[in-house]
Length: 258
Image 1 (spheres, rainbow, N blue to C red):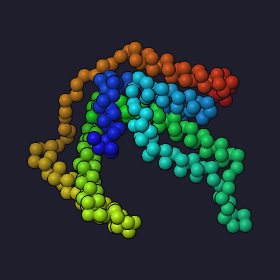
Image 2: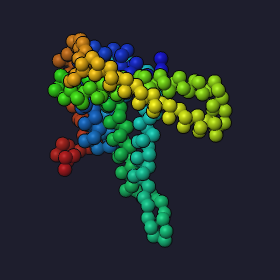
Image 3: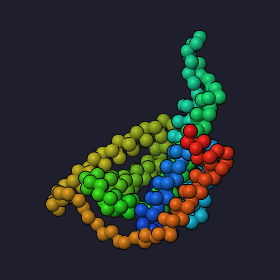
Image 4: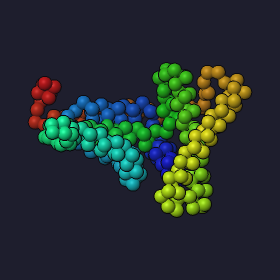
């Protein structure tokens, strides 16, 4: 299996694979909303713990896979938090510094972002893209938007295969023997992949036009298991997150909203 498709493979193998997208979206969307609305402490911490328990427990996502999936977003989260923590002053020349207010704001950004990302992974690691596209079609999203997303998704597989083939060929020719060779090989690989993407897109357009494509490319959409019990459990979990946040923060609803 390709490393680049690990998240997609996890979604196809998930024990929640046959659950209705609506059910999983309620849970994931509620966790994301809670991560955004509740205070970073203790709200984001509670949301992150609940999302982790859900991912590693009922969703059965392997910890190593989850760590790999988090590594990419973590870079952007850390860079964003660092940019908030650092302050630039011009007194006596440019100076970088930190203060208590900027560090607190950076911690808030970090907490909200991590909790929201984990909440998003509840849906991403349990729902293949084809199910999401079918759900969007049922939600009356314009066919043009869905088709663009579907074509990009399908193109990713071909591009990943091209990248791997080019990289293997360059390694066999010692294209990464030293730093200078690696930089040259990487630049050549990017150019080759861009050319292949352009050619594949042109062939795909010609093929669709030859088949009389004009609006949407319909595929089979098997029925999914919708569960009122799952929705009720999701609502109970989200209510528990809010209640525990208010309890740990030592304020009531009125005090928190103020």
